[in-house]
Length: 137
Figure 1 (cartoon, one colour):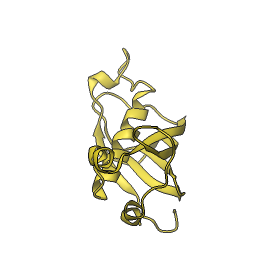
Figure 2 (cartoon, helix red, strand yellow):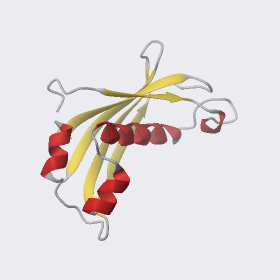
Figure 3 (tube, one colour):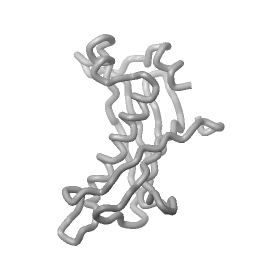
Figure 4 (tube, helix red, strand yellow):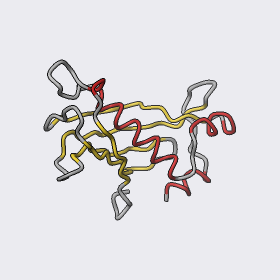
C-alpha cells in the first residue's frame, strides 16, 4: 500500500540497556524498536492488542522478518521508527520499517516484516476482520 499510504513514525530513545559494552545498540534491539512501532501503529488505528485477543480471539504474529543494518545507533540517540504497509492480504500484512536518527533521518536499519492474523487459541491463520481492514485504510 505504498500508493500514497501514510508513513507512521514512532519516537524511540536508546537506553543503556539497549547497548553492548561499546555503547552501540545491540543488533536484536532493532527488532524490539520495530515491534513497538507496529504496536503503536495498531493502537493509532483503534486496535488494542489485548482487546483484539479478548474480544475477537485474534493475534498478529510475526512470521517473517528481514533486517539490513546500515549504521550503528548509540546510547542516548533519539530515533524514529517508521511503519508503512507494503502489502495487505486476507490474513497478513507486509510492513516496511526503518530506524532513523531523529535529527537528520539517516537510516540506520531497514526491516521487512510480515505479520499474520491468527486465532488466539489455535494459532492458525484467520482472515483479518473487515472492520479492522477498514481501520488500516
